[in-house]
Length: 244
Image (cartoon, rainbow, N blue to C red):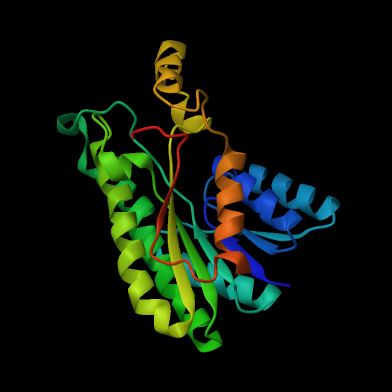
């Protein structure tokens, strides 16, 4: 059974990715930092539905925690087949002059450095197998930028650069690296928006709806499958046409 590590897997998009991949037959390592209860509930639900899952605590900005995440996964399932760099935090509606150093460092450490550290650790397991998948979750704001989301946009743009460079580096080892850039998705991250704001975003989306976590998890399932074996270094916009 192939195993998957999903960072930030206890809630939102990460939770849906874990559920979708477990139903597809993968063993899932659910990484969480603060949401222990949600991670344990999700793990139990997957197991009750016949799937295989473990929940592993860890701050992905901490190198020791990242090493422990992979070691626990390896002990439970063997070499991880895929890493989904999903964990992320945002500073909604924050002007850059109002952002503290602590807030800036938290976003960059989690969204970008965390993904880099996890990818670094993943390669130590995958290269010897000459096989593996890394999927990075960016954002449409990483492609086009967003006012009052400067630090978040910068971190997600960095994820795109990471994807392209790492794909080149790991291709000779048979590992593909791709990126998904979600548009407006119905998660906690848009809970700060008013209904009027959400209606405007929906109207600006050509397909006429806000995206769901399932839209993202379906894309992840495809990109880690054998059907995507010749796809690497790509940024897949799952956005309903938003931003075109």
